[in-house]
Length: 282
Image (cartoon, rainbow, N blue to C red; front, side, top):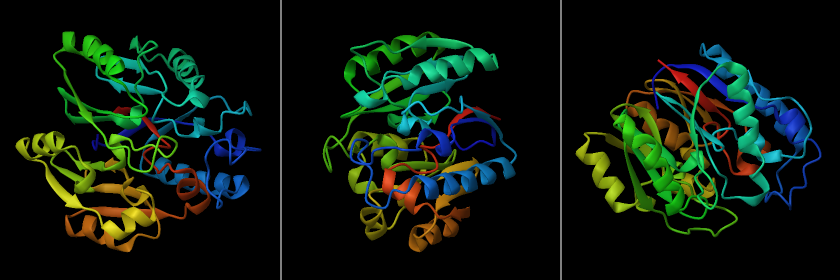
């Protein structure tokens, strides 16, 4: 999850979020669609500057405001994409956008998670090439995890489900990736108190060093201080305003580039990882 980013799926906030009803989408009072669009473009420029090719989803105003968070509706494996099934009802049309994009881009589809199974990409963490951890919570259920295991096990990939706490409730969901961001194959940024204990033990057993994000910044940002996008090992893009977490990453040998994202990430509860669906890392 931290290998050099080569190809990534994104969707423009300028169209998807235009006219979005903040209450309906559970966005905070700082949400400003015009400002969010500007901040999203800054992120896209940083992603492109890293050397990644951005593949844009259809640039239309279809009322799917959360579709800018392209990490969630699909998962890409070495064997093709998996089209996921969304736990948030308002987001149920989004996987079809990804399926259409993969067909257009020539990316094979390995399979789909079918209802009543639910899996969102924010709950999926590649521990290594043959180990996928999935958080079981308000957006991902056991049926979905079992379907994922059925798809991946023939390819030698082990899938493990880990229970997540409810934390702030169903609307402000806690994904597994809310509490961990891989920084390199052997290094991850975490908020350990909310990590499932068995997942924590797996990470330690795999020799993955854990960098603790600052607790005050984690709570002040509703977890967004921890949501960083690796563009290469130990090179990340992060939301501005969390200097202690940034310093912790730098002390572990990382370079962190930040961007202002109060109207986009903080208000809408999704960081730079959420805003990108890596299609190819090499």
